[in-house]
Image 1: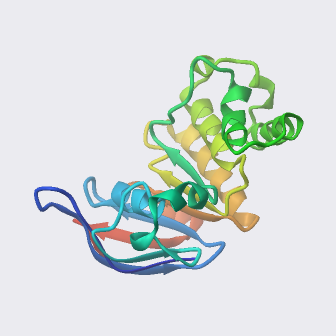
Image 2 (image 1 turned 60 degrees about the vertical axis):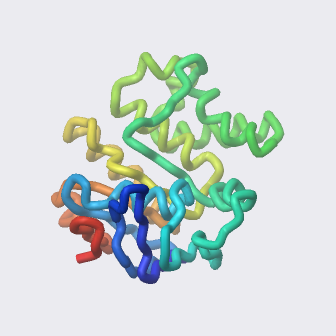
Length: 216
């Protein structure tokens, strides 16, 4: 599903955020990307999501080497991903339902089917009763659950999350991780970057531990 060989990301000025990293993630695995602040977790997530491009090495996702992927092919590739970041990038001029509908509208789903799927995604994260609310009226944990609903409404095969519980209290964080676990249990490949080692003991995922850009 996802494999990297001597993957390196170097930014202008010579700073290497990822240094010759190699790993393999099988379909349906749950993987935690861990490490200190600045270890390269976010960069690795962005490389897998084709938000960043590798400087050298190979990164193969669904049989496609992202290092050689044409820019025109990236939108199609991303349809297989659900992306969740700390900054949820919610649209506060639209309702909860409309936020989840947006990815389906972009790819041209018929309206009735799009609404059905959006409501199913909201139900999955426990927000169906808030579909008419504005996101600004939601708590931090509810906003993150809304971001997850939007990420999964296209039924992705890979769910990528960068520090999804970083700004949440312990109770909300636990609820968010349980949602990710539920997707893992139905075969979705889940990758979560986190600095919290307690989740590793609880969920026993595969772990990619980074230290100053290198895989430990």
